[in-house]
View 1 (cartoon, rainbow, N blue to C red):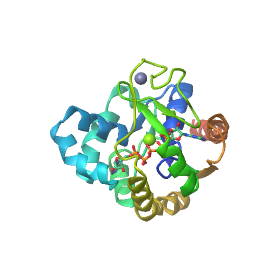
View 2: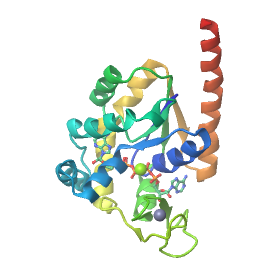
View 3: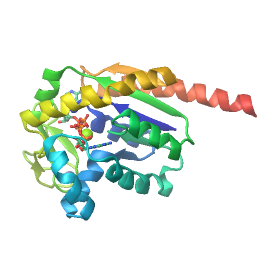
View 4: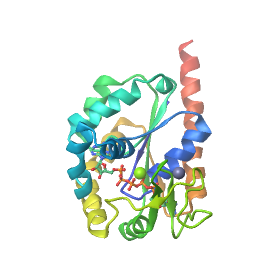
Length: 224
Ligand code: AP5
Ligand code: MG
Ligand code: ZN
């Protein structure tokens, strides 16, 4: 099964994708993380993507599909995966389904107000070494400025400055939000209110997944 997490910057897509990945035993694929890895490595793709990411604009589809295709074709994705931050517009969705149309799919939107997003993102810190996510207000590391998982240094993401956050939010409203209607019509769209603590949001999402897994299993047994 494939799970797509939709939502504005700071909604908690990455946080929830990580928890779901552990619970369901399927990988999390974040196009944002993959792009940041390429940027950190200084690869040709990373150099091309860097300017757009820093400005809070969408990276060209060609680059996004190049890294995404590579990742999804790996063996660990055969049983399913969680997409965080992809697709970002209707064109990406349509192109994606021409390539990968082989899985049951749920799309879950996490909705949060703009002011709350700015508060979350200006206080977000990520581990420089392993990418784990923290928050100075809502999810502090055990030792100040050190990653609980690997001891790495905690840093701020380059695009987590208030003016870039607001730009990313506008890009979301314009480019990504039309996907809600797209998936609503497809019939596999669910929404959770994201204004609660991390565990509560997880419970809301997991409840949706569990009931749909049952439905998918019943549908499969109908064919047998
Ligand atoms: P991407 O990395 O996807 O960034 P984003 O969509 O802006 O989302 P974020 O990662 O900022 O937020 P999140 O929802 O993951 O929240 P998180 O869990 O960290 O994309 C970055 C850039 O890459 C884009 O701008 C674009 O340039 C490019 N890009 C990526 N994909 C692309 C694509 N498909 N096409 C084209 N370009 C692409 O949580 C945020 C903070 O809040 C954390 O500190 C967390 O601890 C805290 N938090 C989480 N949940 C809660 C809660 N319930 N209560 C309180 N705090 C919480
Ligand atoms: Mg993220
Ligand atoms: Zn770490």
